[in-house]
Amino acid sequence: MADQPAPFWWRLTNSAGLSEPDERETAMAAAPFSPPSARSTPVPRPESPAAPLDSEALLDVWFAREQDGVNVWRNCQPGASVAEIATRLALVPAAFLSDDVAILPLAENILQMEYGRTVRAIPDRRGQEILEVADQVRASGSAFARKGAALVLWLWASDDQHGPLSVPLSPVWYARTLAALAFRLAPVVDPAEWVRDADRRDEAARTFLLWSGQLPAGEDEDAARSILAMRDSLQQNQALAQTMAEHEHRLQVTKRLQEARAREAAARYSNE
Image (cartoon, helix red, strand yellow):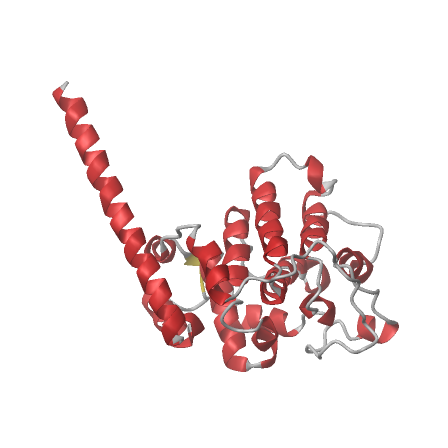
């Protein structure tokens, strides 16, 4: 990321619409998460809709992306360890877990750090896709979605504070990863639990790695899939798991229909 004249904490907490951390917070940047205190009063964000989406509606946003989980697993490359990602989650500044974290300005600020220029002037398609997902999160009105997205943004920005990950993340999958944790995991598990609870932190780290296109270090696809399946809160939630199963069935039916149409089109072309 390009060097910035303003301190790291000032840039991020102010872009998140929150108060600047005091000297104690700055000194404890490497300390585990503790709940926000009454001192850090969020700035009201009038752009959020009055009626936030519920869990199923948030999941519908995820399903609308029509992600092929089988293909995602098949194309994963070796990545950082689960412990490395989980440690970064445990080091998240409290401001990122405020119910009122201003997710779109936060995303814009972190992308500006990444690209070294005003985010609205970024020509890169992937940068714009990230902003589109961040805007979906903002428009959802869901504090869970905002906090989930903020934790992803923290994992990206934490290089500035704690050094690079052992295996770099691919920018190709940034938007997908942001959507996965905001709209697939956050509706099922409060992102605050990704930090406080060891099992949920492991689940969040594994989910982050998967949708970032990486297998956890030291694990092959079978092992990684098996462990994440045991952790997957969505699959363990009976009502929501049924919704996910129905979506996956529709996705497979659509895929088969598209393949059949492609074969028919190829046959017609060869006979002409």
